[in-house]
Image (tube, rainbow, N blue to C red; front, side, top):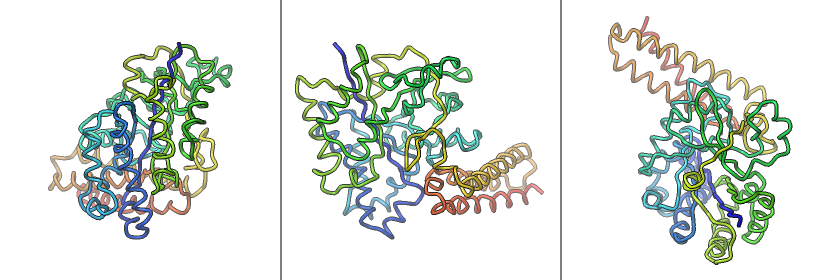
Length: 401
């Protein structure tokens, strides 16, 4: 008898300082978004006997919602402090790791990857008390070159969009063009490291993002997995705070009341063919065997397919902004090495390292994907981060002169 499992995933992220900005400029939108962080754990507890969720928070989002001042100002809207405490106690939610500032990893310097990975993992541990075993790449932007960095950071699996998965043998990839790799985890290897790859079902995830009901979901999952023999894992992943579907203040009309609650009631029935699951639990029980290759790409957002990164790097202004980041990164790492090489010659080494740390943080902030996603409307924010970083690096340069 076929077993069908469902890993329901939600992605949570806000760019640097955005909750503060919304509180000051659009209080109603701020309230809608804040409630999106409280609902998952409340519904997970309500259906604790059957519900399992997989949720990723960016480090910069956690930094904001853990800020006592932010929590105080949201108190009348949503108790974020209490919600975080409940997440720590909730055993049927798997916390998924993310890059701290939510960068497009394949588009930023490799030298900066480890910092985003380590900082994001550390923040998850500080807030939730767990070190995530799974990783959700920002904008689902993934390349095989990321595998060694993810493994070195401590991750055991990564979620990718199923449309990018191909047979491992390079010569056979064209033959696999129309093969559906979307309903079981696999392994992928690169640079002497291997990691578990969990495919996200794009079609059903699109419905999760925009609106669906329990009956449609049940029929769609059964239909999609009809040709799969024995065992299937359907992984759906979407933003958990964007769009009216998730921000709906009338919960009965939104994701949690209209879809999730009826879905969990149906799961409680004996004849329901789909079982919710945490991804790590599924992998532990059913370790993947086959190897695949994942083509470089992202998920489908805006008007783009995700088969390239044009949403974030297609325009001349976006390209110039990435050139700014790459140039700043080279300068930072050059000066960082010089400081360490000459640390005994520097009059005030503590100050030099402090300035380096601040410059590094500005650099990582500049790599936030949102600054690129919105094109010319937000691209200036990249330079708002790189400017203070360059000032700090000049100060260090004067110390080294």
